[in-house]
Amino acid sequence: MDRRMSVLDDDITDLRNRSMRENILIHNFPFTPNEDLATAIPMTIKQTLGVDVKFSIIHRNGIRAMNNGKPVSITARLTDRTKKDEILNAQRAKKIAKQRLPFFITPQQPPVIHANKNKIYDKANSLKKQNISAKVKRDQIILGDGSVYQEEVPLIQNSDALQITPDEIQRLDEIPIKSTEPVVQDGSEFSAVGAKVQSIEDVRNVYRKVCVDPYAASANSRILVYRIQRADNGQTVENYHDDDEHGAGRRLLRYMQENSIINTVVVVTRWMGNGHIGPKRFTIMESLVNQIANDLDSE
Image 1 (cartoon, one colour):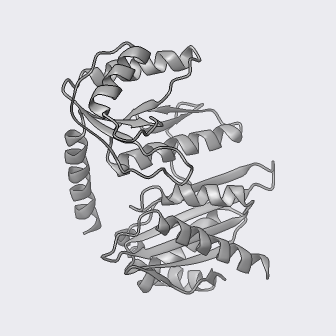
Image 2 (cartoon, one colour; image 1 turned 90 degrees about the vertical axis):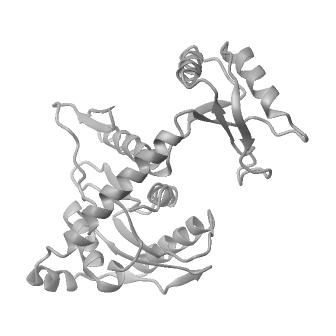
C-alpha cells in the first residue's frame, strides 16, 4: 500500500509540476496600495534584467506582510515559457557580478520538490562543515570518492516497520524515551517523542521504536530531526525527514541549532485534521521539541 501511494504521490507531483512550468515567484517586491503588477513587474524585469516578458496571470499571494516584515511573494504565469530560463540566467549573472537586485525570482514548484531540494542542499552544507567533499548534482549529493550519499537514517514507511521482527521490537521497547502530551489545534493533533543519543545507531533505534508503535503508525506524518556531536572530532552530524510535512524538518533542525540542542533525536507526529492551521503548526512543533529537550536536560 505504501509503495502504491508513493507512486500515486509521484504522479500527482509530476502533474502539478507540469502545471507550473510557466510560473515564476517574485520575492521581496515592495507592496504599494492599488499596485498594478501587470505593468510594474514586466517594466522592472526589463530595467533590471533586460528581459521582455508578458504575463497571462499575475497576483500577490496575500496583502499582509510576512512575519519578518517582508512583502508577500507574487505569482506570475508567463505567456512564453522560454522566458523563464532567460530571467533566471540574467539573475544569476547579476548575482555573480555581485549586483544587488530589488527582488529575486524563483521557479514555482510543488512544495514536495522545493522541500526535497532544500534538504539536499542542507545536507551537502552539513557534510562540508564536517570536511567531507560534497557536491549537489541532479538532486543527488556526490561525495569526494564519486559515490552517491545515502541517508544515515533512512525514511521508514509503514511497510518497512512491518518488517521489524518481534525480537527487535522487544529490544526497542527497552530504549528509554521522553514523550509529550498531545496538542490539538483545529482538528490536528501533535505529539513528540525524544531521547538523548550518542550515535547514528541510537537515532535509528529511537526512530524505529516510534515507527513500530501502533498509535504513531496511524499518524499522517512522523517528522524526524536529530543532531549528534561526534566524540572523535567534535563535528556535528544532523539531518531530518519531513515525511510529507513539507518544510517541518528543516524548521525544527534550525530550531535545534539556534537553541544549541545537541545529542538529541526527536520525532514529532501529526494527525491531520480538517482545519487549515498554516504556519501555526510549526510553532506547535517547535514547542514540542523544546519540551522534549527540557525534559531530557532535567534528568
